[in-house]
Length: 125
Image: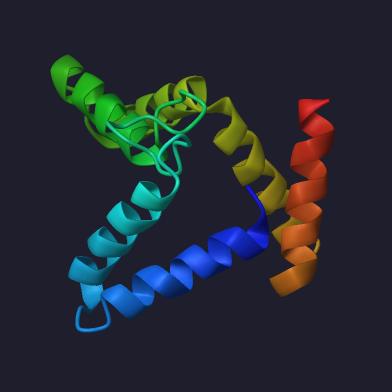
């Protein structure tokens, strides 16, 4: 969907909900934008991203429940959580590794974002 069309929809929705703020505005804007583009899934729903992967929050919650079920604590719990999350969302784990490398090189701001994007793109191919 064209960027200009999204921007226009965003302005229209904001004008409709000018009296709201905070979480109320966020929810109203999400519903309004989704209503303007009914055939396209714009936002994560039910713990899944648009491409069917679990959201980061859903993956973390599932991993925490697994660790709680195993009765883990301390460093064992931390290691299990990291391992579980990396298995559920390897794309985000790769980006985190790329970010760590870029920060190690002293990058920040726009340079950091470019380096992370480039590194993640290379890892996918």
